[in-house]
Image 1 (tube, helix red, strand yellow):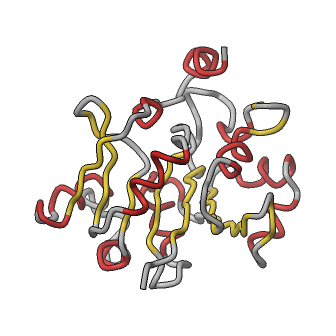
Image 2 (cartoon, rainbow, N blue to C red; image 1 turned 90 degrees about the vertical axis):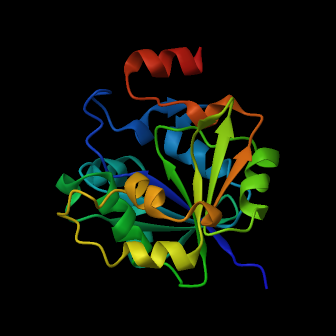
Length: 204
């Protein structure tokens, strides 16, 4: 039986180079995080918030309700997890979210500053069966990566204060046979919208 897929949007960082929460940047007459959700071809989404969670709740009040009970948005079921220790970095948000997932779900991990690729290309990632699936464009690895339960459950055992508690390092430790690289026809997987200049170039 095919495993259900959950999109995990990581929005727990400080956005220090943008100097504004990236998910709350204006995009298509609303917020970037909403555009990211709307682009997902699946149904279930979990958002990991951290430093700026209150700003997200102030801007999009229903996100606060989604902490206690999943909310419906544009035919998606959205759950929100607050990372209580965001100072430990991106992986701490990954771990906080994974702890809440159904152990049969595969996870598609998307940092908020990487645009979600077009649906036809995302389907290639979702449909590829392996513990870890990484999209590539012109021989460069990008996001989102897809993690099967067998792999992501092992991440829950890591001590968040350990310097090796990073998703990229844990992937590198895995046997190559457990990793699939999928060639994608969408350069957005390589984008990092970290600065106002990056955002201007992306939206212009």
